[in-house]
Length: 203
Image 1 (tube, one colour):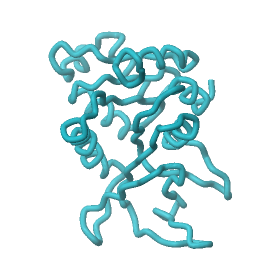
Image 2 (image 1 turned 180 degrees about the vertical axis):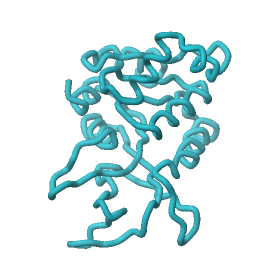
Image 3 (image 1 turned 135 degrees about the horizontal axis):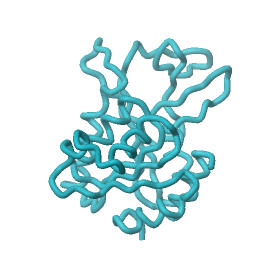
C-alpha cells in the first residue's frame, strides 16, 4: 500500500497533534513525497487535527525564485502543509546536522504532557535511516508506545527484526519490562488504527 494512503486510512478520525520533521523535497518543480509529508496529509483529512514540525538549520537559509525559502543547496524547503515549524539552530551563525532538532522536539513533547495535559505520547515509524533509528530508541527510552510499520526494508525493519528475534543486545537497551512496540504490516492500516485506540490516541 502507498505510504500516504496507509497513514490516511490508519489515522482516520484522529484529532490530535502530529509532530514530524518539517522538510519537503522538491525535484524539478515536483514534490518528492517523503515521510515528512505524512502529517500534513493526515491533518487535511481530519478536522481538528494539527500538523507541526521542527527542522535543524543545516545551512544558510536563502530566498530563491519567487521568494521561496530554501534550507540548503539541494533545494530542501519547509513543508507548507505544516501549521507551524520550529527551526532549531545552535547560534546565529551555527549549523547543525539533520539530527539537530531531536533534543528540542522531544523536550517539547514531554512539556506538553507535563504542562498541557497531553495524555498520550508516542512515535510511529516507516522507513528511515540513522536519525530515525535514534528517534525510535529515544521514544523507547521515554517508555512511549512505538508503532513500527513493516515493509520498507530500511532502519524501521531492522529494529523490527531485532525486536522479533529477541536480539540480546537490542533488548538490553530497553527499559525494564518495556513491551510497547507494535509491529504493523504496511498492508494493514486497520491494525495501526486499532493500536492507536488501544494506547489512547483516538477515541
